[in-house]
Length: 291
Image (cartoon, rainbow, N blue to C red):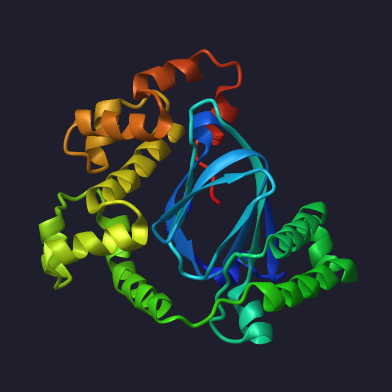
C-alpha cells in the first residue's frame, strides 16, 4: 500500500532523482491526498488532470506542469469519467536541493510564460532519460544540475508572510492526518479529534479547508475508501458491506456515495466491469497508482 508519508532514504537510496511515468484513463486518474519530504515536478504530456496542492485546485492540460514542495498535501483527480492523462513525475531528494540551493528552499511556477516553457522543456528532458541513466551517466547528472540552475533563476519562492502562516498551519495538521491514517477504521468524529488535539471543531474544520482542500469528513472517507479498494484488489470476491464496515464507513450507503464521487460508478458496476474484462489482474493493479 502506498503510505501517506514516504521514507526519503528508501526512495533515494542510490540516486537523488526518480522518474515515474503515468498513463491513465477515466476514474483511474486518482491519487489520494498525501505528502512526502521530496520535491515533486509533474508534467502533463497529453490529456488533462485536476491537481490539488495545499488546498488549491487547478486543471492541468498538456504541456503544463506543477511543483509540489516538500511537505505539501497534494492529490490528483479526473475531471470527467471519459478523460485520459499521460505524463510523468520527477521526484527530487530534498537533501539535494538543501545542499545546492539552501535549506528548505521552496519553489513556485513563474508568471513569465517563456520561463514556464523553459522549465517545461527541462522537465521533459528527464522523461527522455530513464532512472538507470540518471544513476550511471554524466549526462543525467548534468541535466540535474542544469535543472537546478533554472530553478534558482526562475522558480525560487520569496519568503512571504502568508507562506509562513500556511506552512505553520500545515505543520499543525500533519499529526492529525497521521492519526487518521492509522485509526481510520475507528469511530471518529470532528469533535472527538478536535478535543484530542486541543482545537475547537470550527478551527479544525478551517485547517482542513485551507490546507487539504476538503472538509474533515471528506478526507476521512477518502482514506477509508483507499483501504476498501485495497481489500477488494486483494480479494475480488470480498463482500462489499464487510469491506466498507471493516474500514470505518458507518454504513454501506456512505461507502457507495464516496465510491461514486471518486470512481464515477457504483462499486457493483465497477466489479461487473472487472468481471467482464479479459485482463482482470491488470485492471485491478491500475486502480490505485502513487503520484
